[in-house]
Amino acid sequence: MLIEAVVPGWEHECCGEAFAVGATVAFRLHAARPEPETATEAVPHVPVFIEEHHGQTPEDVPQWEVPGRVVTIEAVRYGRRERPGQPRVHEWDEGERDAHPLDTVAARAQGPDEYRVTLETDDGTALPEYRRSVEAVTQERLRLEAVHRAERRAGDPVGVRLAALADHLDQHWGDAGVIGRSSTGANLSFTPHAAGAHLSWSRSDAPADSIGVELGGGLFGLGADDDGVRMLEAFVEAAATGRVQERVRETPDGVEFTTEVLGGDGVLDSATRTADIVRSGSFTAIAGPVRERLERGDHRWAPWRVGEPR
Image (cartoon, rainbow, N blue to C red):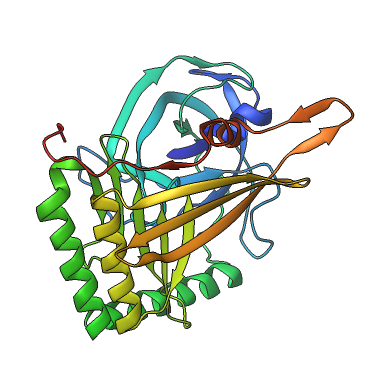
């Protein structure tokens, strides 16, 4: 009988043993969520299992060692995409999948996101059945509740205005940077091609409603109401026209970076973030991005410029 074992790349890189086509192995497996069967006589259905050996499988999920002979090995890499509205949070893009066959995998080899290993097991080999843990059931319930809240909020007055603002930014400034957005406009990230200020916003799907904004280097919390959207609209206009600046102040404990959003009558809003500096005698340790911002000092971001290649 053939089964497929998915071996996460990080699991193997940490402490995985070598394996090769034709060799006998024993993987600690639990069953993957079953997919709708599309088996045909030419392509029979192969059940899929997940290899895990770091004690992260919930206790109420069946898992044990399954012996088998390695028939094929496939190394798989996925593309990455930034989650709209959440800068520097990246997730796999399974639409960009690159796979190639291997004959051997060395112990603790660095490489792909995962290995797809076809195993031949003896008929009658006991295989773990699929079971969702209590924790997974709870997480799925909370996820669905969040999805339903987000769907309801997309149609309320704030959601309609966020969608309109996302459309406005795309239409007027899309050629000036790279935009990633959710379909409703509730989550958006804009990275300008030139030296303008980065902007992102994300409306919460938690019970407490709010809009989180990152502009330049500052984090802002806005209300999910008329005033909050009006302020966000002003943020977009300020970033587009070069009215966002950063002030830098070194303190005994670290460095304060204050982002100021400017309006016609002065500062519309500001946000301060503090970065630690480790000092020991004559030794000073500063993280690279913090050092760059410290050396740059007070500055004002340039306006977004249309005409750069997308």
